[in-house]
Amino acid sequence: MGLKKPIIDGLTIGMGYLPVAVAFGITAKPLISMFDTTLISIMVYGGASQFLALQMLTSSGAVAIILAIFILNSRHFVMAFKVNYDLRHESFVRRLILSGFVTDESFAVTANRTPEEQTFPKYFVTFIIAYLFWVIFSAVGYVAGDWMSESWTIASGIALYALFIALLVPAVRLHYKYGLVALFGMIFHGVLSVIPVIPSGFAIIIAMLLAALMGVLLDGMEASE
Image (cartoon, rainbow, N blue to C red; front, side, top):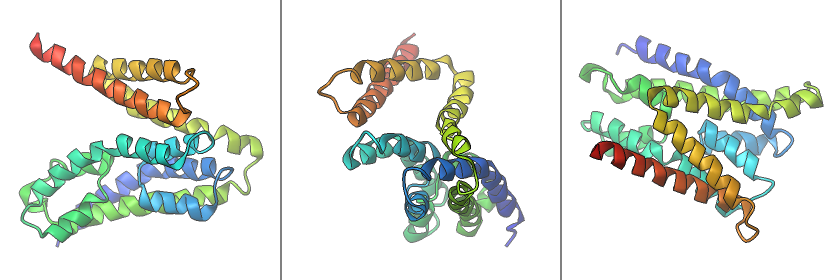
């Protein structure tokens, strides 16, 4: 069946996930139980959105957290559509299963596979290995918090900001407008967060939507030039 390359691809993605997953587990320890930490990784499977959920736990309600995660992960719809198109010869159930495991990294690795490599087993092997790395090492990170000092546990919270920077820098290097969108998001959130009638959780959601709108406007201005 030739699964060597899909396995290597999955392990490569998984090794990239390992430190971030451990950091997530460590960061989650003071806030939620190990069961909840593992369950979030199983069900959400989104690094940035999971860190965002932790940040919002102390200041936002469930609805705001769910909306923020949905908005942040909505880009996966487009990626899943591409995977579904590449595997259109597979059954709907198989394509539906794969859609639940699509991430930025797994999409990037599989996007340029040849027609011969576009089969359910080869995609599934890559996706499931990466997924297991994320879930397992989230739990490992939580356990690691037991023998780490309190100062190290607190310091691990910087992983949130490091992750966002890691996501942002490659995009900014590709085009400056992504940096402008991030800047607009910061400004919008800064303004909205000081308005008493707007809950902090919804301030984040509104800022994200406004920043995305600015990105659309920037694209439109660029296209018209």
